Amino acid sequence: MGQKVDPRGLRLGITRTWDSAWYADKKEYAKYFHEDTQIRELIKKNYFHAGIAKVKIERTSPSHVVVLVHTAKAGIVIGRKGAEIEALRAKLEKLTGRKVTVKIIEVKDFNKDATLVAENIATSIEKRVAYKRAVSQAVMRAMKSGAKGIKVMVSGRLNGAEIARSEWVVEGKVSLHTLRADIDYATATAHTTYGALGIKVWIYNGEVLSTKKEGGEA
Image (cartoon, rainbow, N blue to C red; front, side, top):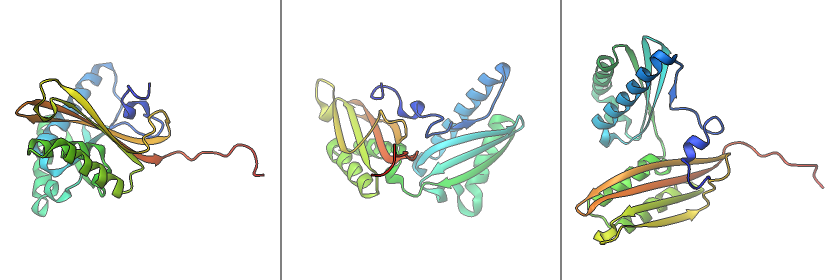
């Protein structure tokens, strides 16, 4: 089962928390959910080159939304003298009709973030870099940055082949069945002249919960 299901959802409440932290009744739930989707789409669209890893949303009250933007290039999102972040806040307040607080969290090691690794591979392929080279470079950088293991899958008409296929690259250990394992997972799409290539990335960063020894020491 661990091989098929999204490893992030499988570990919610164990090693991961929800990207949307709020509670709503039945009448408001769909509205808030749709609003969260629009917020994420707006940020991804306007700051695609800023390396947005994730966007977390907290609702402290019905009239206040806190948006935490995890990015590899904080300077681009903040802008000169905070101009960009103020413009973003204004757009989000117009979109939601609520008071919005935007907080920027810099991703210090983007080579171990699955979202950024997947998007980087997709961008390289779109720039006509050979997919094997793009994947091998990403794997090498992740392992050098301290990742315990990484697995990358590329699917589609690889090198313009008539028949689509999938290729895997695995380095180190990627334990998908261990729930205490810190597994980061992401997907991306590379649009080429031969069609779309799907990219999946799993990165294992070690175990989160400490293991207890059974019995005493001999």
